Structure formats: structure tokens, C-alpha cells
Length: 403
Image (cartoon, rainbow, N blue to C red; front, side, top):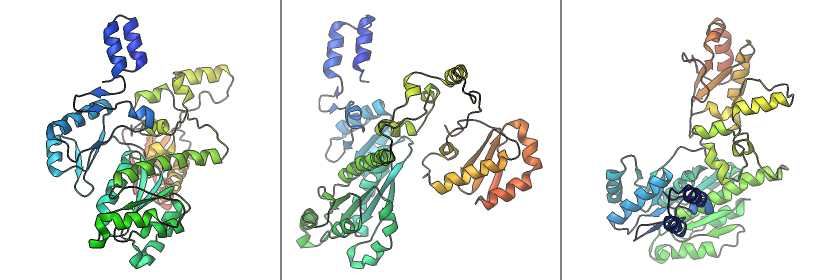
């Protein structure tokens, strides 16, 4: 594991390493030299994302070692252009590795919150392998992706029927072979950047994607940028950058030059999928940076005469959903109104966890009787809000139950 410069200097100061060892660490800082590969561990700090493995053509021994090294450092790794045989090879060393035979993505992925909105479109079904490489790359990097497949210009009504999705996107990836006209059509409809990806799908005069590439490069539509033939990964990566900037830009547009969150030191000790998003978006966490714990915040709030210093904690509504759930205003409102129904009974501490059609109610055990006495009132109102089944968690209220 690569040491940070500050860590190296601290160890030198404490005589835990020699000057020679410190010098070696500083020279190698940022990458790990395997002889045949220099693993760029510092890339995430420079660019916001870790190094990705291009699997195609790598000798088995090299690929296995490179993959294990990145996984050991980051706890996750993305590989592209992998074969089934390479998957079997890596699986022997890392059993939880996942392989998708369509996109040829080889990955071990941490759970993370998906932000923004990227739409991936294809001209035809044959373009889907490249589209999935783009979509899964963007998802791995923490973006919400919507797929709109088989909407080529030979039946343009199919694309026009999806126009609402295009209008909601922060970025669109247009993937097509043949003559590659899809990108120009979408470019003429969309107000956001369009990343055009030519594919090698087509008959002889397609020249392995060259015809589509030239068509996309020569598009007269505004806002189109073209990547190399079949380069789904490149499109997904660029879309990630555009989408993250759009999320930040939206806040700035509303008058916020800097974004701050209320994360505190307690949050650093538990798993929080949103932490990665805040890092990539440059969101500032002053309480965590100053090592303030919840009890510190309450103490200083009381000292400053803030009336609600001892108000019961009430976490973000996003914590009511399992990881990898796409959050919408409608879902958040459903949970918020459901909790208000129960709070009207005089129950101050309540969480309504949403599991699709199921509402799982968490309250303190001393409030169980009140819930049961009013179960018809609760059931009636929560069903009006869209839940089909209502349950009471017998373990009682547990903050961070999705951590």
C-alpha cells in the first residue's frame, strides 16, 4: 500500500523508517512498480477516479497481479475488454469478481450512491455491447444511467417517443454503427453535451466503423464530441465527468458557490456510499474536517444557546432506502409523509424504511403499543400513500440500519 507523503515524514520523525527508506518511498510515491507495470495509485487523487485495467492482450500472469494489486489498494477495480478465460483466471484469486459477457466488463464494485442522470442510446441491438461498456463504466464511477436502446433513424419515432428522457439528462451517449447518423439527430434535439461513439457494426463500406466515425466527426449538430470506434469506456468516463460537473453547476446556479454538508466524525466510522460522491464533487465537510463528533456538536450548540441543541437526531430521508436505489422526489415524499402520519400519534422517533411496496416501520420499543393500537389508522394512510404492505420491525428503532 502506497504511503502518503505526510505519513512517510511522520514515520521518519518517529524513527520507524530510515532516511533511505523514506527517500525510496517518496520517489515511488503515487505508483507501485511491478516491473512490467507501474500501478498509478495516485490517480484517484489527481483525477477523481482510480486506474482502470484494459484486459485485452495482457499476459495471464501480468493481468492477475495487476488486478490483485489495484483491488488490494482500492477495495474495488474495473477491467474492460476482458475474455471469459481472463474472468476464470482472476476468479481463482478473487472469488467475488463479476463478469458481464455482453460488455466484457470485469469488476469488483463497492456499493455507492448514483448521482445525476446519463442517458445511453443505441442505433440498434448490435450496438449494445459497446453501450453496456459505456453504461457500466459510468455506473461504476457513481452515476445514474438510463438506457434507451434500439432507437436508430430507420424508425425515428422510437427515438422521439423517448424525448422526455433525453430532456432530463445531464449528458447523452449516442452509439451507432452503419452510417452513424443517430448522434446528429440526438444532437439536434438535446440541450446537453452528446458523446458520439461509432461502432464497427455494418456492411463492407462501413469499413469497420470508419464510415460512422467520419459521419459523427463531420456532424453539423452542435454539442457533439466523438470518441474512437467501439470506445464505450472512453464515452462512459467522459460522461461521468460531465454529469458530476452538471450536478455541481446546478448548485452554483442556485446561488451556492461552495457546497457544504453536515457530515461529522461519527460518519467517518461507518459505511456511507455518499462519501465518495462528496469527494468527487468537491463538497466540503467542515464538521468532519474539524473532527467534531455528535456529542461535540450538541455541547457547542448548548453553549451557544441554540434552543434545539438536544433535538432528537433525524437523518436524511435517503437513509430510508436500500443501497443502489434510484432516489426520486416522489419516493422521498412518500417516506416523508408516511413518517408524518406516525408522528401525529405523538411518536417523535420514527423511521419508515421503503422496500419497494413494503413500508417497514421502526420506532422505539416503548412505542410498540401505540403503533398496534392505531394500526388501522396507520395502514389506511400509508396505503393511500402507495404502500401495499405495512410492517413493524420487532427489533425497534435502529439508526443506521442500512449502514
